[in-house]
Length: 463
Image 1 (cartoon, rainbow, N blue to C red):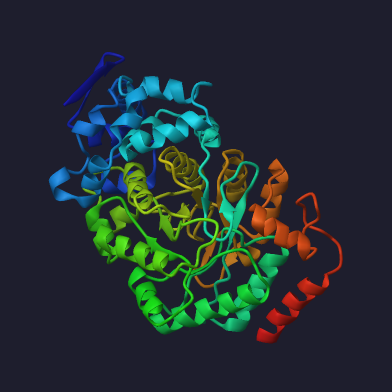
Image 2: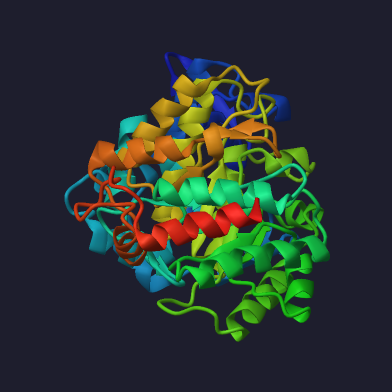
C-alpha cells in the first residue's frame, strides 16, 4: 500500500502498478482499462508517491509477477547491477533531476542503459513534461548497422514504406523509386505485405533485392511478415535481410501475436546465419504500440505506457537494427486525439532511447481519431528535435494498404532540413553519386545522371 496526503485528502494506492497507472497522463486506453486516475488531484498525488520511490523498488516489486511472465523474468534476469550502481541510491524524482543535468551526457546515458529497467524508464517518464522528454532523449545516442550505419549524430534515417493493396510489383516499384528520389530508404525498404504468406514474402524480397543489387543501393530490405513466414522464406532460399516482428510487454500479449522469446531468438540466429550484413550485425526489426496488450486482453491492470516500455525490454534482448512505435495506429480507443498521440510518441521515443534502443517513430493516426496532419507535423518536429533515429516515408503520407495516415517523403525532407540532418553516410554517398543529393547533403535540383537514369528505367520497366 502506498499513501500520501494532498490538500488534506488522503490518497491510497494498492500496489506499484496502481501508482504507475494513476501517475500516467490522461489517455483513453487507461480509462478503457479502468486503471486511470479518477481526478487530476489523484494523478498529482500518485506522482508525489512515485517521485519519492527508490529506484531499487522496481527490482523487488514487479507490475507482472516474475513467476507468471517471461518478460518479467527477462527484465530481472538480464538486469545489469554494475551499470545500475551509479543511480542505485536515487529516488525516481532524484533520477529525473539527474537526467536533466549536464552530468547525464551521451556517454553516461549509454553506460547506464543496461541498468535501467522498463518500469524505471516508465516511472521517470510520468514525472516529465514534454520538453523534458525531448531534452533527455536528444542526449541519448544509439548506433546500429547492417549495410549502413543508423543513429549517428547529425543523421536522420527514413524507412521507405511502399505498401500496395494487392502487392503489385509495379505499384511497389513506383513507390520505391519515388522514395529513393527524395533520399528515403536508408533505414530500410520495408513492405507490409497485403498477402501475409510465404510465397508473397519470397516474391517481395526478391523484387527489392534485385533492385538493390542492380543499383548497388547500400541499404537493407524487410517484408514485415510474421516471423514464422520469414523463417519459412529463409528455408526457401529468399534473400532476407532483417527478421521483423511486432512485440508487446507481456508474455500473454506476445502469445497473442503467436510468438515467445525462444522464437525470436531462433529468428535472430537464422538471419545472422545468412551472413548478408556488412557494416554491422543488427538483423532484427521490431514494432510496438501503446494499447497492444490491452487489445489482446493481456494488460493485467498495468497502464499502457508501462507495458509499452516493457516491450522495449523484449526488443533490447535481440540487438535490433530498428525499433519503432506505431504510435497512433491502434486507434482512438487507446490514444484519443492529437494531444494524446503527441505525448505517447515522445514517451515511447524517450523510454526506448533510455533503454539503449535505436528508436524510431511511425508518426501516424487513423481516420477515426480526433487528430489530423497538423498534429502529426507537431510530433514530427518535436521528435526530430529529440533526435529520433528514423521516421516513415509513405507516398503522400497515406498508406493505401493499411488505411492510415503517416509521414511522407516530403515530410522526411522537411525534418532533415529543419535540423540540418543527413541520411546514413553510406546511403548519402550513393545519393550524391546518383545526383539525387548535392555535396552538402541536400536534395539536388540537377538533372538525372546516367546511373539515376538507369534506376528510373529499371523501375519503369517493372511498371
